[in-house]
Amino acid sequence: MTEFSALGDITEWQKDFEQRLRASYAAAGLGTAAAERRLEGVRDGLGDWTVAEITDAGTRVGYVAVVVADDNGTLAGRIGDLRVDASCVGRWHEQAARAWAEAWCAERGARRLDVRLTEPAGELFDGYSVRAQTRMRLITSPPEPLDGVTARPMTEAEYPQWLASEKVGYVGGIVRAGALSPEDAVRKSDRDFAKLIPEGLATPDNTFLVLEAAGEQIGTGWLKHGFLPDVTFGYGLHINEEHRGKGYGRAAMAAGEQATLAAGDSALMFTVWGGNEVAMNLYTSAGYRVMEENRSIGLPRTVDSGFAA
Image 1 (spheres, rainbow, N blue to C red):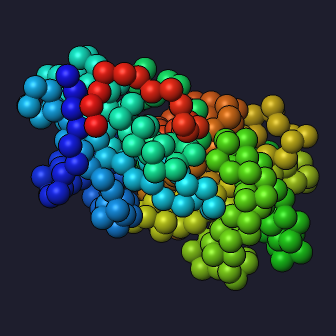
Image 2 (image 1 turned 60 degrees about the vertical axis):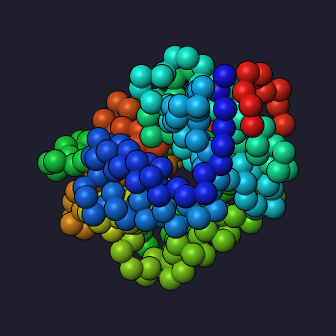
Image 3 (image 1 turned 45 degrees about the vertical axis):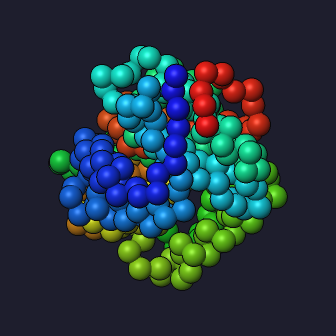
């Protein structure tokens, strides 16, 4: 029978966990410095995690790590890690560990359970809805611009309308992914934009673009350079609704990649909210790999039997 016991000393698990994260980041194309920076953000919260050893007949077969914390007024659980040794995969230890994590978080008042995946979910988390994906691509050569499409810096006169539209889109993405209520999403949007671009167009290391075709504005772009070492983060590359379906999405990606290279970075990264299949398909066709995927499920739920806490 699969059993679980919380560890007092997580040193051995943490070493293994960090090695696996580094490997997954390297496979996605992150350089050493960028991978370490991203790992720092994960490492900062490890002190709050409960790490349980998964055993079968007294033999350790893996680990599962969980935490419950406030997320904008809602208690949410998170599976930070769930690993079963390769030699023991397929013996239902993974399903028992998932069920144990769900029960552990629900008992502590969590209303939602999140999981961060750095590998394909497989069947284990099929019942969890996709909340967001982090996608990235190395840019090895200047992109080919789309004929007739140009990108220019955004003006001060254009900025207020762009900001209002960007906030609406951000809120919509959060709500569509099921991450927050509309009211909480609006509050998060206001906080995030105030933190990210406190000086508007003058905020250092940011590029704000207007995309045009035949003298008409067809979209906008917003990129943060040096988000990680050698990595630009695309907060938004959007084509106006009336101009979609004309191939301009690839033109927006090319403009973002060109701005990335011009700023001295060599990779472009995006977050796409769950439910936005159009953007996911575009990123896939453009060669952007999934580096991380966040999924979630509501709690409490009926859990599988066959485990002991």
